[in-house]
Image (cartoon, rainbow, N blue to C red; front, side, top):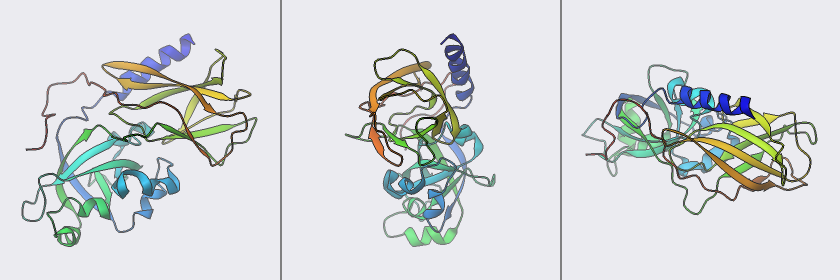
Length: 260
């Protein structure tokens, strides 16, 4: 427990190295097929296309954050006033962009959504555009944080899960699991992206204790009964909790207001 707590504060410190809420300047391109993002590094798989109405993004390593950035939401707009709208569009990060020429590679739907009305095809023809962007809270109204048991799980020796519908402007930096009613917690490790796993699987129904970045520190979120005794691979379970917190970054002041 003490080791875990110290490790958790180390993760918090290392995850708050950049000011995501600040307005950033870069470029964006797009994938012609959104399915390219469904096999992305976050591990969302076929569930990817159902996130944010298909407005998806692969982000560079500084945004991906070794997987902690998976599920983060960004407001993006292109800077060509002839064809682009002032509002831009909101995307969710689902993959790692290995091309450092652009901060984002978007789904074609998200890329076209940056256009003025009726000009989506003109924007797509540009292929790559100058953009400005900032991180914004994710909103999943009436949707709790969900836990999906991965197909690779093997009861009773191995459990792999991933989290979906993480609201607010936070990052999951640590996860514990225990049998419901027990205080004997086992920590889970980030396998990749949004996927966490453990080979120390408690028996019975399972509860989770999640640490998210919130305020200037972190916050424990306790999902008291998530997986039933007979949990099954490939099934999505309701955690019973919602995340709406917004992490505060201890960096220099910046333009974190609304679009103008």
